[in-house]
Every structure is written in C-alpha cells, then in structure tokens.
Length: 336
Image 1 (cartoon, rainbow, N blue to C red):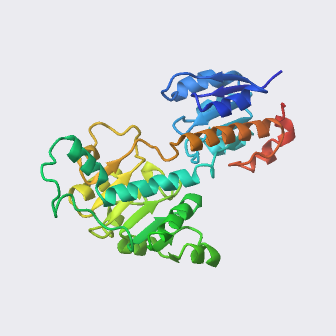
Image 2 (cartoon, rainbow, N blue to C red; image 1 turned 120 degrees about the vertical axis):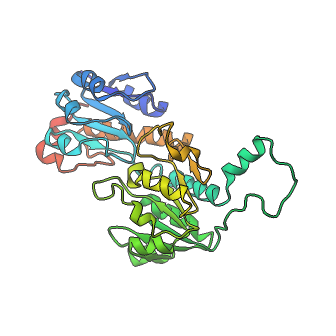
C-alpha cells in the first residue's frame, strides 16, 4: 500500500510530482490555511503531512493523527509546529533551509535600498500625478547606503548572504549572534562582532535574520528601539514577532528612527487598522522573502525530498528533531 500524503495547499509542481510517483497524494485546494480543527479532522488517515508556515500543527493535530510518521514544512521556520509534541509521538519534522538563502538576502537588500532612497514613496508620487517640476534639489531626499554601517542580527545562512552583499557597498558591518563566527568568516565578510545594544546604537541600517523563539520574541522592543540612531532604518525579513510592532509604530510615528522596511508582521495578513499602513516612512511587503519562481520550486523539491527520505527509512536532508530516532527508529517508519 502506498503512503498517504496530505499537502495543505498547492505548491509548485516539482514537489507534488515527486510525491505522486510513489505516494497517494491529496492536495487541499483552498488558498487559505486550514485552521487547527480542519487540519485535525483531515489528518487522521495520513502517513505524511506537507504543510506551510501558516499552518498550525499543534498537539491537537498530532493527537488526531495516529498514523503520522513525518511532517515536512515548506519553510525555513518551524515555529508553527509543536516539535516537542511531534518528537514524543515519534513524528519526524523537516524543513527547507538553504535553498532560499540568496533569494531572501536579495529581498532584504531590496528593502534596505527602497527605504534608503524612498523608492515606494517616489513611485506613488509619480503615479498620483503630483510630479510638477522636472527636477528639484530637495525632492524626496533619501540616504546614502555606500560606506554606511550595517548591523546584522543573526549570522546564519541568510545573515552571511546579506553581509556578502554589503562588501560591494564598502559598508562597515557589525553583527550579533548567539555564537560568534569563526575568524575566517569574520575576515571574509569584514565583520565585527558586537553586543546587541552596541549594534543598535551604531548602525545606520539594521537587518534582522533570527528565528522566532521564546528568547527572540519582542527582542526589538521599545527600550531597544530607543538605542537606534535617529537616521537609522530597521529591516525585518525573519519573523514578525521578533519586533514589538506596537512599539515600532510608536517609534516611527514620533520619527525617533528614520524608517522601517518589513516583510513580516506579528499578525499576517496585517490588520487593516494597523497604524503602519498610514505611515510614509515604512515599506511593507506581504511576506515575499522566498517569492521567486526558482526559490519556491527548489523549496517544493526539498520539502518532497525530506518527506520521502523519512518514508524510505533514510535520514532526510534537513531534520529538525534528530532525537526523534530514540522514540521511533527510521526502520520503523519506512514505507517505501
């Protein structure tokens, strides 16, 4: 009997096709994410789950899935999955890092440059038909990027890719991470290790690249925002909740920092009443970090490969919870 796989929403064809070669695959067609009750109802007879970052896989869902062997998340983050509960139940959890590193770093730099040069404001200025003078010396003045100081919070794959791009802009780059990088990495990207407070107080641009955890929740709060320079810009392509969004809105409204550029938010989609929507010193994107055709296809292939590896009794390319093997060895989950 073929393994039964539930895919919570349609993903690029390469991933689905890989699964369909050896599994019975059910793809949920609705574009909205399933709520916990729907997912718990659907998952009962499935051996594998391929889910997205916006799908909550908690203890209720896991308790409703007696046959579940593997969860493959089509994402770099996995805070939407109760990994501890999955491990206790012998469910392997996988994710898709690496394949979207350069794509997300490109977007972080897009946000940095757009906010520095007020690109979104300028585009709206032209489209609204209010551009009346061909060239003005004081129209929509922005900030230089070349030669400025960039602070990177989180020097993982994406943080390093952002640092690599800063070399071409001759930037002074500070970084903060829970683990200091090797001297070779620091030399390669011309990095200087700094405390978070030092980084915030000295950087012209601050780019966040950290996972969401109990330690990073609201890491950038009102007190830390007060440390930033008045001309500083905050860029976030990691997780929305690493910033206290209400505190950020207050800081931007009071013009205590120059700007923010955000791809992620505490609540997604952002509330229509959110004050950030009414501010001209913030650039807002609808969570597009990996949104290129190439990156999303690579993610689909890796998500499928992770899932199939477990069902073949093999260590998957990217396993979140290797300790699960003590509760349920790979040999006992093998179906292919």
